[in-house]
Image 1: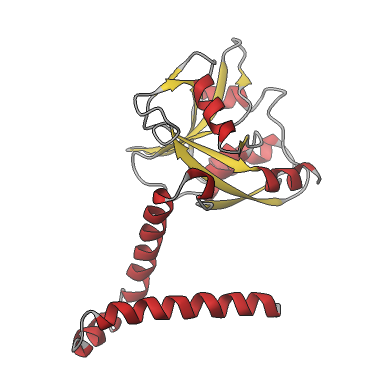
Image 2: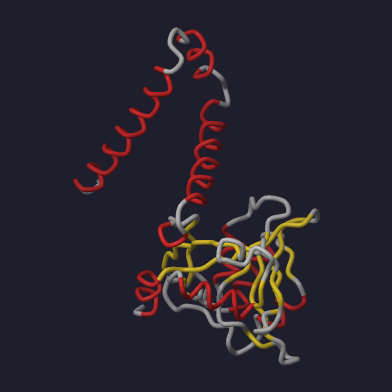
Length: 231
């Protein structure tokens, strides 16, 4: 059963939502018939949920980076071995680049030992002050200034698994300690979708490598990462 504080918060949120809906209806008086048609539509619920999701993302983007809410929550620490994680990606029919296979076999690719939830945040290089792009070093410095915290190594793979319905053409770079491949090149994971399906790929992350202004970084916040490190 929900705690009393949870119920109170739910009630306050519901009241706020109802008041907002009332304000919208007041702006269109005499539309009772139209309202009946809308609420009777077989896709009313699903399309309303899609609208909420879209408006929430748009409103979050308008907020200052330091105040921006989490856009997603993933579970980490849910696999005992790297082989288990790889098999889950294969079973989910996610495409994995050769570089990723290399990185997941490196000593620095480690898994958390206990399950935990991790809130994710995002910001583009343009939002970080580099609309024309910048070096990886400059991206990392800008992320640090807004309080971003690096993700654990497995976060990219977990995000790929748990975000199967990613939009076509959308790519997200993981803000993490870059992992060196067998050729001594530094990489971070890159989660996206091409025409041929969802991918777990990686992005060259030597400090002087260039990132476009529209590249988006995914990161954590301090409080939650401290809790994970305490597990």
